[in-house]
Every structure is written in structure tokens, then in C-alpha cells.
Image (cartoon, rainbow over all chains, first blue to last red; front, side):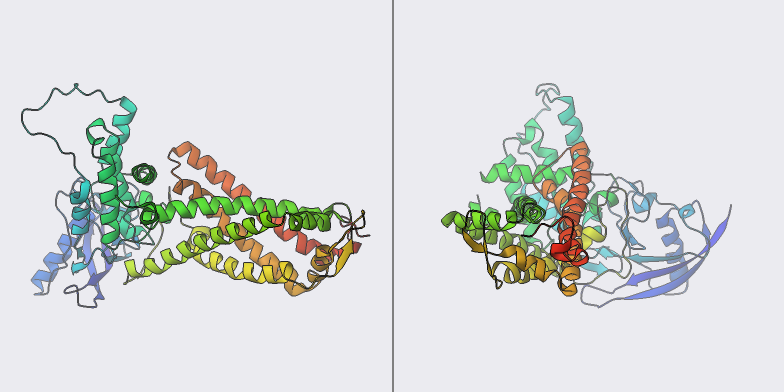
Length: 248
Length: 235
């Protein structure tokens, strides 16, 4: 088992108002089987033992499904690998002596809380604006009561896999949230259950996205490249289509 | 429910407007290039084409005003997206790079604002040079006296500043269209991966063909020496 020494350059920022700065750390004893977050755990243990402030970073499930982790590593959201969240990125991707620059996702709509942790509640507010279906609660209905063609359910499910990590915003040169909003709109709008509120949902979510201060989409498609679940920009096309249908 | 005007001011509406105006501008430059090729036709082909356009009268003015509106909307949205982008990310990344794969980030897409602004300035300059330029008169075969645009073009491109300046801007036009054509159709809700890939390839080919088509004329006139050039027929 080979051990590496990794040079880290990490963004440190006390709070939203602090201008922030980079701090450099030399971390020996990095095991190639460690996940990227485990490597940061080792760094934090070291910092705590040295009586220094550990580096704050977001995580929860550490199995690529929750969307909590969202670091920009050497200029790429979630690091160098496609369809891989930071927690699923392993240190074997790197070599002994490598320098890794870690920054938080940078967007006015995602203010820094501390170090690498940003406030992504703007996404929650987009969901609150219309990312739901209104149903009567009660006993679960018979699953096959509403027929859904296979292609539609597959496509809708592809969009539903969005974990809301915000990598799309982090990587977009314009800090646009079009992929997130598009995926959430397309997921529900395609299904019969989402149809009654389709127009209202599309208009409200697009309006909220704009209110939050995200930039415009310029079709760079960088969002699709960094998305840990590979959401296609076709979701953005679906959002545009439904928006136009709602207006006319 | 937003009004249609409000809808076209939203992020989604603006993008669709950019796409529609972009596609219309592509159609315009295709016609423009076709018109330019008249310089290689009969000796008075270019002047009689220009005369035909002038004879359209009010129709020409409608086309001019429409074209100006399309151009201004397209440029205005493009510049406002760029201005907003700086507001949406006040602190930039120290290190930033594309992840590749499906990403369409590249020289062409990242320079859309730059190439667009150069084209905007160029168009003002270009209209001033040719549409409002000092022209003599020429006589068509049927004796009609018309503006001699052909001689103005041939004279203008004897100047290396014009010949190479135009060539440079047309390369930028190619770069703008390289991302622009695909992006316009994507904004106009082309969804399928297959169609998108086909449009991307066609867009690149069209960008190269249009740019080369436009820049060939000034370079050919400059190096061919105008009326002495093999493909250009003068009286």
C-alpha cells in the first residue's frame, strides 16, 4: 500500500464578511484507498491536535447520493472524474507530491458560511416555489392506476436523480442554476402526476431562480460535465419548452 | 402569469430571444454572402443587385429596421448576460478548468462576448464604409444610372488595412458562429442528444464555410489586384 504526501491549498474564510484567503498544508501519510473526504478528515485530526481550527466542509452520506459534498478541486466541481461526487473520489486519482487546490463553490447565490461550506438554501427556495405535486394524503393509491409510458418514466427518472449538490452552479462560468431548476421542473412536468401544476410550477421556479441571483445560461454545458449523476442539458431544453407553453 | 413582455425579460425568455435573433442573423449573413458573390458574376451583376435592393423602396426600409432591431436585441441580451455574470460570481476561482466530456467550453464559447462586441463595432464601421460610403455612378447594360458599389468594394480592399482587418473580423465571426449556431438551436429547445450532435457538427461546418466565404473576397481582391484578378470581370 503506497502512502503519499499531498500539498493542499485550501480556501479559509471565517464567515460571509471575511474576505478569505488560501492556506497551505503539507499532509504526509495519505493512503491511496482513502476517499477525498477521508483525506480531509486526516488533515482535520492533524489540525485539531496542533490546536488549530479544522477545515469546515459539507458532507453527509459519503456514498454519492445525498449531494451534500460539493468542493471545487483544482478548478473542477467534484474533482477530475466524471459522474463522481467528491465523497466517491479516491486519493488513488492523485500522485505523491501533487498540489491540490480546494475552493468552495463560488456564486453570489451561495454565500460562504465558513471555509468550504456554502449556504445552498437558494435551491430549497426554488423547490418551495413549485418543485412538488399537490396530492391528497391517505392510503397509497394502486401503483399502476395511472399508466406512464416507459420512455417518459425513464426520462423523468433521469432528471429525478438530481441530488441538488450545486456543482452545476459552481462550474457554470455564469453561475447559472438552469440545470438544477431544469431537472426539477422536467422531472415533475413529464409525469401525469405533475401535469396539473405544470404551468404554475414552471413559471414560479424560473422566477425564483432569477430572484436568487443566479446568472443566465449560455449553453456552455459545463454543468452536464460536472454533474455527479450526469443530468443532461436536455432538462434545460424541457424547462424552456414548458416555460414557453406556459406563457403562450 | 407574466405578460409576454415580462416573459421575454426572464432568464428563459431572454435565452429564447437570443436563439431566435441568432438564427435570423445567420439567415441574414447567408443572404449577405450570396449577394457578395455577385462580385464574381457578370461585370454589372453586383451593381444591378444593389440597384434591385434599392428599388425595393419601403420594403428595404422595413428590412433594414427589422434587421437593426434583431441585431440590437441580440447584442443587448448578450452584453447584459455578461454584465450579470460578474454580479452572479463576485469572487472568482483561483483555479478554474473545464471538465471536458459533454462540456462545450472552449475558445469559441468563452469568447462569445468578445467576438460579439467586435462584430458590433465592425458592423457600424462596415455600414459606414459601404452603405454610406462615397460612391460614383455606373451605367447598367440597359442604360440605368446606379450607385457603383462594385468599384467602391474593389478600391477599398486594395488597402491592406481593410483587406486584413476584414479578414480578421471574419475569423472572429466564424468563432462566434462555431458555438452560436448550436447554442441558438439548443436555446430553441432541441432536446435529443442525436439531433444536438448533428446540429453541433453542422454549426461548425457552417461557421467555417461562412467565415471563409466572407474573408475570401477581400483577400482575393487584395492579392489579385481587383479588376486584374481572374475571377473578377470589369467593363
